[in-house]
Image (tube, rainbow, N blue to C red; front, side, top):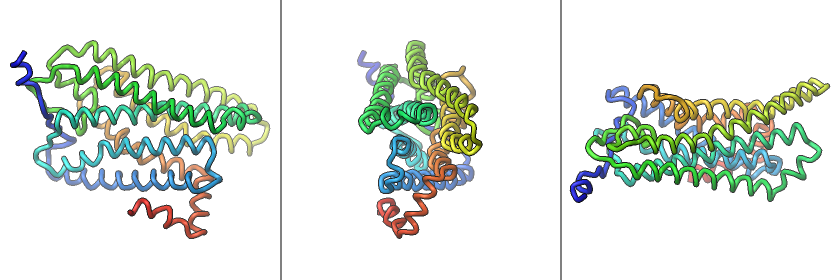
Length: 317
């Protein structure tokens, strides 16, 4: 027993995206640019929702929660990855790796739940508009948001507990740029079957179950839109749902490829992870702002009233 304790891994080496110094420098510049846009875009969207009364509706309340999760999700991964791109020794402690894994799962799983709740919100707004304001009360919105964050926390605790209880001895090189579950399991020195099954079951709960709700919601939405008599009504309904549906496809598509499909090559796995851990948090605020008239109008009002720099002041401070 004492020998096992002595040989237990206390730190991991993250191999990163490339070993070539020139490629790492190029990746550093690209990832840094993406991260800055991510931080600016999400903080700006959150600030607009909090300061503009026209955006203080259930839809934008959940969008504000999604941007918050996106911001923390990206910040948990990207700064450490940027430091490692400029470092020769890409080391992270076992505790640091565990913390990164836990936070990654919390914010990632919370996003899954939030996207499902947002699809339900769009379903009510389009399919049952007369009762929408009654059903989606402020109290219900807060309870749904709390449920999303709670479910994310519980699922992450289960997955992290299973992963950390495995023995880690000998090989400590993780073929990834951050501590993600499949990459950590690959260096475990014990039997990972039960842990993989637990992760798969949690994936069914937090990935496939919300996807099913989203499909049912959008199936009803499409039927309702087709039945609309006016073209303007159809276009308005499509515009309010198009942004959310695009975000759902991008996020869930990459998540299911990683956690719910047979093992792919390490390089392919890293490429998918780059998309949903680095690129996707940047795309979400851009998609919602560029395709959403309400957000563009709120931003225009902020600029016209001279509040734009007041909104940006918390970002620059």
